[in-house]
Image 1 (cartoon, rainbow, N blue to C red):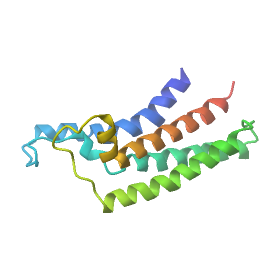
Image 2: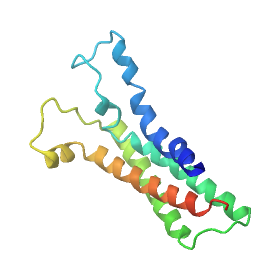
Image 3: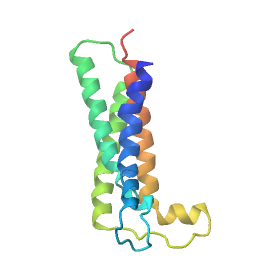
Amino acid sequence: MDFVGWFLVSIVMPLTLPALGVLPLQLLPLPAPTGRIRLMATVKDGQLCWVVVAMGASAIYELWRAITAHRPIPPWSGIALSVIICAMVAGMSLAAGGAVFSSPLLTTRPGGLKAWATHYRVFVTSAALSAVVALAYAALHASMLEP
């Protein structure tokens, strides 16, 4: 049960709450280009990558604490650490680039999933990086839980 609580607080909430935080804004009479606030606007330009950086930093800290406390760490932790660091570097670049080079919101339905993914490739990449870091972080955490 402890792992479920950790997973909700450390993985699910950082990934969902920033985007969901915009939903109450729909109650306000704000001018919006389409007349409503679109959830995709909050993540389309790589904003999920900031969560990648935060989760990666937490994973590194947790691994560091286990090492300094002389607790057993999994033999594959070096691979997980390398993957996390690479994802963090890519994520920082993608999030910074997305802030500078914003992609427009689609106003019409594209010609299928491939066209949608191509248009929102920064979002798709940031979602993939988020999944990779979340899985690596969760695996490290679960493997280092004290019995």
